[in-house]
Image: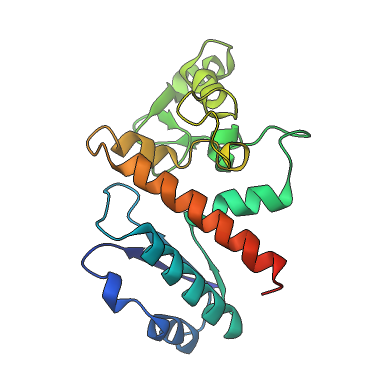
Length: 197
C-alpha cells in the first residue's frame, strides 16, 4: 500500500489543494499524510491551516483515500481511548511502546527524535525507574507536564510531538503555534464527527 507524505510550509501552502489528492489517487496511493512543519513555525494562520485540513480531508475521503497527520492525533486519541482507563500520550513512542536501535548504539523513542534515552550495550538500564527513558515517558503522560495543565485537550494531546518540543528550543513560537493548531483542529474534527461528515 503506497503512502504519500506532504509537509506544508509558508512557501508551498498556497500550492497544496485538491490536485495533490487527485495526484495521489492517480498514482495508486491509498494513504496520504499531510503535516505542517513540525520543526519550524510558519506564518500561516491557525484558521487557514484548519480550513486546509478540513477541505483536503473531506475531499480525500470522497476519493476513497485515508487522510491524516499529527494534527489528527489528539482527536484520534480522544475518540479511541480514555485516559481514565489507560494512560496514553501523543504517540506510541511517548507511551513507551517503541524504542529505536541506532547503528551507533544509541537508543531513541522514535526515528525522528534527537533525544537519546540509552545505549544498546546497557539496554536493561533503559527500564529502571530513574533512567532517561522512564523519566521522558513519565513526563509526557497527562498531568505531568506543567505546560499542558489546564489545556482542554491535555489528556488526548499530552504535549504533542517530541520532535516539536525539541525544535522549540530554537523557535520559541513553535510549540504555541502547534498547540493552537492541535486545539482548533480537534475542535473542528469533533464538530465534523457530530455533524456526521
